[in-house]
Length: 428
Figure (tube, rainbow, N blue to C red):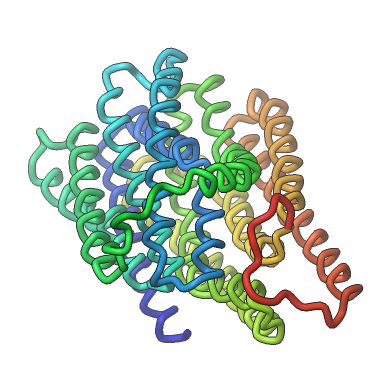
């Protein structure tokens, strides 16, 4: 676990380095308005990814983990069928992003191209993690989110005519296509030949949709908590302010990225499998490892970000960012709280406490929306940062309380352990 975790941290570190280089490049060579447009495009794609996915992977992950992972081909094929239907229904609706003026019409082609490619790569990455191929998943992620940045920034630094958003988006698309090619190669040993003669299981898809939709509600709420502040800032202050906020958000996001790569992506499939298969002693040990790993990682990463922010601002060399550094300290707290909330989240996830996850996230979203509507108009960047931190604190606190309650509930049925395959249900 330590070696695998270290390798994953290195790979995620390279990916984060790519994002960091992109952030510095945008902040130094582009205007705050252009950085704001890039940030809004990226955030809107991130949200739309979940609309396309509808969190169906949650259902499929449990299905694969409760069976022989090498026999996952029918599940993957049927998930692809599901997403094809969702594409047909939702891609036209996303035109509302342009009708509302959130993103300019001239970027419509880039939006749809990057959205579809990113979604395919994201689902492929999740499948690799489910199959306990976390290292390969992080290599794929590096191609998708990091490697292309080094090439594009290197070219654009020496070629002024390449310093444009379309050039960056074209490089992004090439990187995602490369990640999909590597994923196809990595999954070549899956028993795809067994699909011959096996019909699409429409009943399985319908059941998966019923299971996944509540999770989608929770995920959509989490996206709202994380990204609503950008849209409030755009509405009241414009893209330039969003650009400054995006800059600090990207730096503080390092906490969540490293914690997920080095600890969570390695342990959570094992935690879910151990609980579902009735190996409760192993499950408890893995939860303790998760708690320790996340806690130590958060402390180290908060310290590293706090030390690094001044040199980063010096590299950017623009006063518009340095004058708002107070926002960064609040956003660090948000990143730490979100990372810590993963511990009770995966406890609830393993125990199928779906309603608890949905309820806690929904309440936190309501807090985020109210806080943003009250604080952003009056306090701007600082108001958005405080709104996010408040919502994250509510989210983490609720999940901790619900996880402890689920632990007490488990003790009331001491000696009754899950056996064999546990079918997905609507509540955990």
